[in-house]
Image 1 (spheres, rainbow, N blue to C red):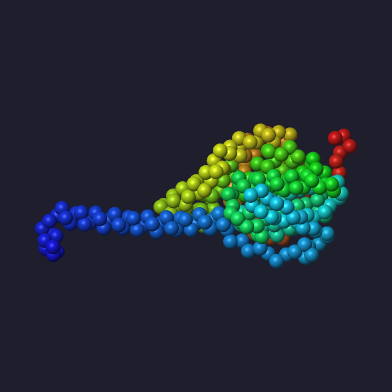
Image 2 (image 1 turned 120 degrees about the vertical axis):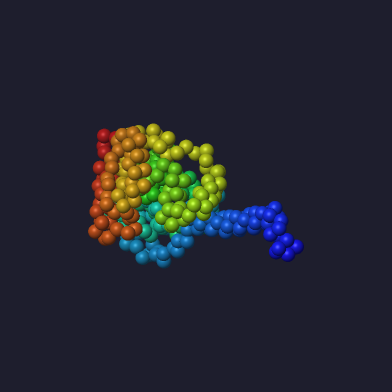
Length: 312
């Protein structure tokens, strides 16, 4: 049938047009799904090149601690020894960070007699695997707590936690689950991993792409199905009664600052807040980091001093 016959047969022309339209829609959907799948993969497998630092490069007598993460294989962390019998502070780095990014905080705390432990979350630094933006990281933080509680040179029942964004979620959730945690500092924490995924999706520019953004969010929802039975963070805050908590909100990231202050208000006493104008620990100047580190140190000195009170 030539083109003139097609024109004389509108029904056939309509069918052909609809078929072409459906093929175009299918093609666009496949392309968008491919982009969304790539976005999900890159967000759950962030390309974080490990730094070349070794314990020999660090001041003091830093030692490597080998341990096994259930279901994930062999891992290692760095232990900064402070005063024997003093609390150990576990630092939980943020998303797309690694343990080397919090060394200034670690050394500040160690210089003030605290024992300090730093490690890489899955898919960050030297740790393989993928991230879940919170649930699996909580298990990793709990593993670190149990590991430190086996040591004889620290106060096993006075453990402190610090965390930023993803690490903050893990630290707060771990503190609610383990009574050995006696103080916690969280920086830019969020209530649900999906909230943080959406923030990062928007930051990377994909959230504004209607189809790709929707598909990427759906893909993350599917990826987190094994953890959907876990309650949101605000529902666990009741377990943190009597545990001192410092909530740090960085004003430049308004969404995370808002969620941080909301969780602070929902948490039981004692709690306190500190609002900074900066947006991320990684981008702070040396002077800003010094202020930040000293504020965290001051909180721990007040709430979890290196030498336990004789009235305890």
